[in-house]
Image (cartoon, rainbow, N blue to C red):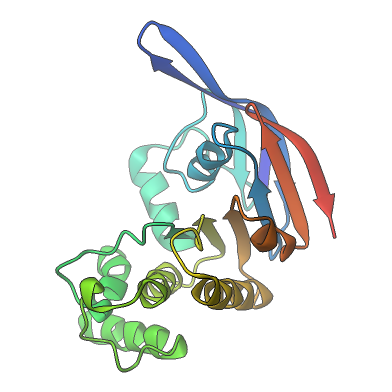
Amino acid sequence: MIELEGLARAYRVGDQEVLALAGVDLAIAAGEHVALMGPSGSGKSTLLHILGLLDRPSAGRYRLSGRDVTDLDEREQARIRRETIGFVFQFFHLVPYLSALENVELPLVLAGVGSSERRDRARTALASLGLEDRLRHRPDQLSGGQRQRVAIARATVTRPRLLLADEPTGNLDRSSGEEVMHILEEAARGGVTLVVVTHDPEVAARAPRVVRMRDGRIVEDGRA
């Protein structure tokens, strides 16, 4: 599913160059569940953004499902994001003035799905996560765990093959975090490739494979 060769990412900060990634080689098979760990500044979020085509490497190659996506133009990268990749973030990133149902419909609007079908798919996605009685609630009317479930429904309603989660339990209590990880793991068992960035050893321990980063490099790649 994912093949990275010599991936590097440098940023300019004032008159200095900061190397966020320094030659990363990584392969992740379709349907694999991988936890990505490392201290702040290790490069794990930068790597996740490149995997999600939200950022571009300064050097190296990225192949997604056998296709080199490193140098694609913005339009083609946006199309691949819509059709192939789902995102779950620590801070939910829900639109505050839209209902749960409308938030989940958003990626389907962008994908050009008709109004009747997208409404049905959004309802089904929310109901599958136990939110059938919260369809009309705005984010500020939901608990943290409920908001993250809405975010997961939004990430999965397009039926992506790759699901990227950046600290998905970081803003949740233990019980809600456990529930969210169970939902993500169910997606992985259904064949979705799942990559989770986390600081939490308990969250990482749930993954069959843990990749650890430091100073922009992979320093450990272990399987359960």
